[in-house]
Length: 206
Image (cartoon, rainbow, N blue to C red; front, side, top):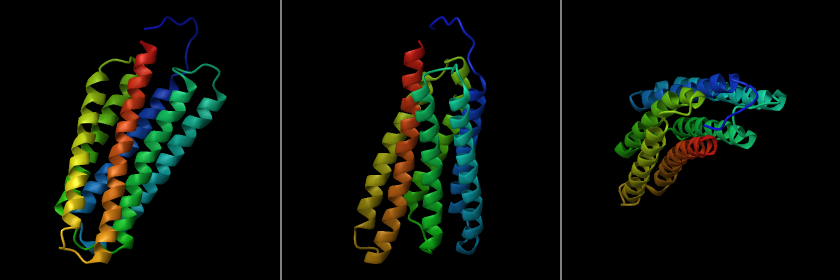
């Protein structure tokens, strides 16, 4: 660890933990969507929208703290990048739920459940990892596992696309489902971006 002569603002750690916990809540709503009857999905979408707004509030709190702090726990650009990428995850998850409801997709392909399960596991790991930013310890396993999960998500995504284009679905249904599948893949990419940012922070601080 680099030796520092000045104290650093510690509330950033709490704010990142809150943001990651909110991402985990969003992933649980995605899981809930899988087992929900189509008629009840609108209510889940409302709760996801509220979670996304809570995520925005957490992100804005981090930016406010960043703008008002003379000393920060690590580089300002990394704080901004980490907060933004956590926010991206919530945006993609909220968009996926909204599309399912707006497009009135009664039956979802099995591969979408696999995508969501990967996202939920990545969310669990991210929520567990954020408190460790205080010490910069036990984070190596986190970003390695999230990168592995993102590779798994890529494979699921490719198989889903092949399934959608195998002639089983009508063209309009393919277009609707592909949007959902692609947004969930973007969420997986965003989890990897968060993990890569954490890795960059740890390397800089070591």
